[in-house]
Length: 407
Image (cartoon, rainbow, N blue to C red; front, side, top):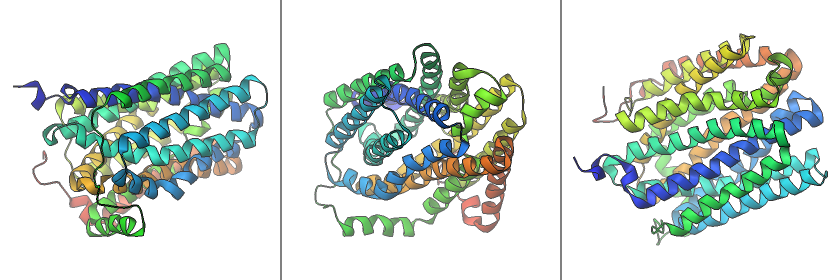
């Protein structure tokens, strides 16, 4: 069987995008550990940790849909070059502030907002480009590899970030993060595809309205977005990890990196399995089942005093989340025409990032009132309950299966 029909890595432009994104994401995930640890060292306040999520998600809520419109109108490759360069400058700014001793909480939040703004423009363009880089026959595997690239980066990045943080401090982590963006910028310069999907479309209200009209006519996409938002909102608690690492599990910054990495380790294994063996059933029931398992794993993590068991429960939750992510992304890409993919990614990003990031704020507020463990356990149980509730009130989502997908 020809390689072109079986492996998305046979396509040159996809290989470049996949590799460059992986390297830049390793650096970005190193930064996540450094920022959360730095905030915890400055404040010791769970609500201040949760507020990082708010700082990151506000630009996505405000600009995500417009980022999708731009991704459907302009040269996606040039848009990505601009946003990746902006994120590199943000990392250099964090390095300088930390290295010179000028870092403050308002400045940390400000840089989170700036990086979130660049992400709001970057993600729709990157995800909308993927279907243009491979054949439709291998698109599910290409999406699986893309997810696995991100998840593997979120295994290596936090782990490396924790060790570098413990050995050299946050400033060095930020400098490494800035350098990692060079890989993505070089890859984009070498990619031949320009990625401009709709040259006759212009940026404006009409383009935005067209995207929402399509979404309204495709209720399965709305149902998937709602399921993703509710599940990640209730179970979002990763920014509380510095408290677990320092006060509850007593493993320090090195252990913090491993706690951040554990969910991605489980998700990466699932995503790689999907890339090799194919997708699980492209069905609403698959997503709901995975969300339920994710919530139970999160609740179990909140109860344990064992570092090893904590890593295991986080990895199990990550595996469930990884399978759900691949199914949701594949359904969205296959159900959306190319000229609308950027806009649908922009809308989806509000749910995909809004759920966990707003959930971090909710978890931080509840942790301040009722304690960290109570916040995590209750959030996990509510996540599972939300999946059961959606199965009851949205029977169309529960019964949906893409025609021709595996049983």
